[in-house]
Length: 507
Image 1: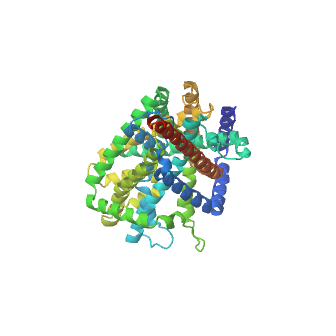
Image 2 (image 1 turned 90 degrees about the vertical axis):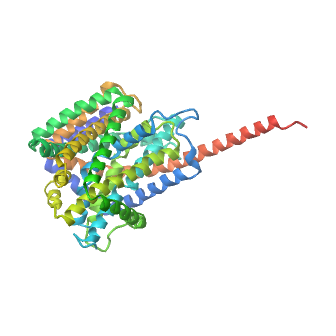
Image 3 (image 1 turned 60 degrees about the horizontal axis):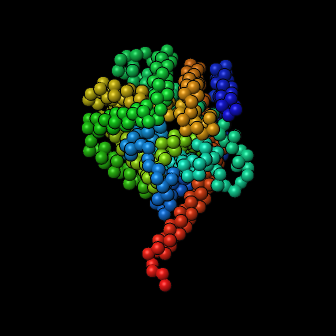
């Protein structure tokens, strides 16, 4: 039933997008504008609260609780586990925005900062760190931790709705089917929009390297080829296809970053990382709660609130996936692996690519701002054109995008299969096949009608109710962890008393 309802909703929006893309875009753009104006403050408070919850759980006494039984061991090594988290969480986004976002902020900085100045460059890097740092990963971590905790310690189904079981609210249980259907719809649209955007950048990379024409025919072919690859990976299972591809992805990404670091302004990049990290830490709270009530500016809504809504909309997908691969980890290991480690990796990535782009723009006059303005998907390759071995870098980046595309697709196929089969951690192959083809079909049809942006906007609009759901999940998780902690402490005290009774002499 859940599969039929969610697929029906998705089909209805896709048909609307095919028949009247302008109407669909206008409706959701209007909804997004209203949402960001009226509820931007809610996103800022909720996401900052999730950062605090994640860090408190990691570094408090609760951090030693295990996601599973005492004898459960992690299914994957630390390296493979981190690679899968990174690939599913935001790998393709880092490649897409690593150059484009710092340049965009440099040209059009937040209110009060003069554009195209050293201050604008520093601000651009600080906000790139901010938008891709602790906040998004904390959203994913709390959702994933909640699902994993209830699934592996309480025997609940691997569903978003099952993570609110500790709340003393009957209404939360009655709304469970609605929550799960919304999770499926948001995941399908979010992944389809990302695959469409990924196809655009892969097309740009193939054009830069091999002269492949940029257009719908090439982009549809890219989606078809990559869909075949991620379906083959998804059908082979998590322990083989997804794990191997994610590990390959991480190695290729690291190799590309090292090449740019060596070929670019190396010392300046180290300085960029150091300065930006200090500014990020010192400005953390102010950026987290910044609005512009006394300025006629939409910058915060267009960037920060938009990102926060996007991360919330992706949280069912990423949360379920990282829960699926995290059995046997302690809470402290989980939060360290899903918040702190990827945040550091993201900081390094933006320091290398964003720092190099700003250095070339400011000191060598390379017009990267024009590339960003003309087509965001070409910004990375415009950077490579200005570096030694540019053709080699473009080839490596295109391969990286392809593999990120595949890992996003196969992990999404797995998660959609789980959500539409009542949390089955090993959904049938035919269900994964249906979802893989459906997501590829959505991406293709909307790419042809110019509706990718509309569906991306629709996904973010769906995120508002999820922000409320995530608050409930965090509260339920906190109550459940406190209960299990007390139970473990009680059992340990009882065990110590029995041991003491055995060794102490009887009077």
